[in-house]
Image 1 (cartoon, one colour):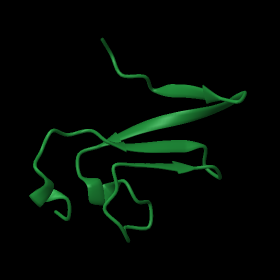
Image 2: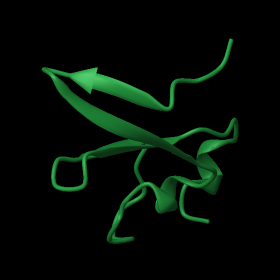
Image 3: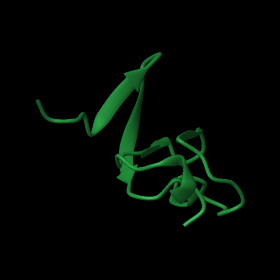
Length: 58
C-alpha cells in the first residue's frame, strides 16, 4: 500500500511530506518532532523512518 501524498481536512487539501529525520519535521529546525501541520503552507510533515529514540536529534 502506498502512502498518501495529500489529505483533505475539512474541505482543505493538505500536501503530505515524509522526512527521514525527526529534526527535519520542524520547519524552523527548533524541535525534534514526529509530525507537524502548517496551516499557512497547507503541508503536513511526517517523520517516516524506523529508527531508535537515540537518533531523534541527528
